Amino acid sequence: MDIVDPDTANCPVFVLSEQYPAFDGPWHTHHRAQFIYATEGLLTITTTSGLWVVPPRRAVWIVPGELHKGSAPKPFGLRTLYLAPGFAPMPQRCCVVSVDPLLDALLMEASTFGMAYPAEGPEQRLMQVVLDRLNRLEVTPSYLPTPSDARLLRLVANLESNPADTRPLQALAAASGMTARTAARLFVKETGLTFAQWRQQLRLLKAMQALSLGESVTQVAADVGYQDVSAFISVFKDAFGETPARYFAQADKASLSSVASWRSACSNTSGGWPPEIKCRSLMTTAGTE
Image 1 (cartoon, helix red, strand yellow):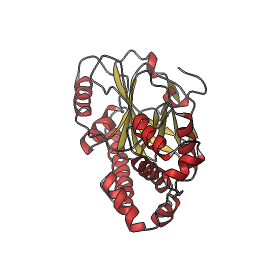
Image 2: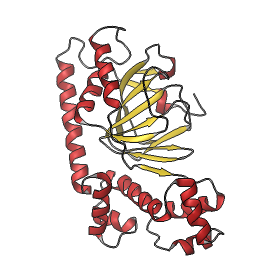
Image 3: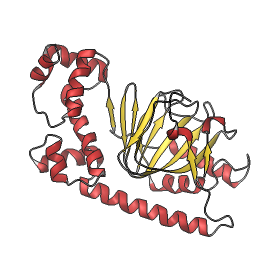
């Protein structure tokens, strides 16, 4: 098994297909931008400004130099595009986007040759199409901003440990050493969301993580603070475009279809399956890269 460091590669843009066990990775940075696409399982990316939940059919942009760490509760698969700064347009901030079927197929094909392709030729032309498609993707609501005020950090830590807590802002703020008015003002100032919006986003992302582990919709709804399962399903559908059951059923179907297509493509090439590759982007053991 080869282990590669994307920051030392000469190729300005390339895609690697990666498989990982469940893990909680260390904090680190990269010189390159990363477009991390979850093909199976669920990945959570944490930065100093918040966290991004990346379920199947979604991808997260990590901008160059962004201190971050990854975690996943069970084994997962990725197709990750690594992009040298200045080579092509990229977002100014981290974000989660929806990946359409065309880009999924393009990334799958690009991962079969990885970094090993000439500067001119069909592989380079395919990579250019990939870059063109990246600018057309829709940003999705899979981000939870983290405040910096110490009192607000205590408040959100309590909710993160118990998202089913139904206490109003007044009670939560008092327990954290401030008034409800101060807390409401700080939420908007430091996260860009009202308290109600932030709590709903927390519950949705916690639900997404639990559902990815196979927990029932009814149990998850209760665990994140919804007494009415129908209300939870409605909020989930408004945020992610599908009911929880349909969302994960489609994700499983898409994952199986992608694997079947990739196997077919690889079996028709003289080189067969590409070698298994692990990338230091998530395998770093300590510090920064």
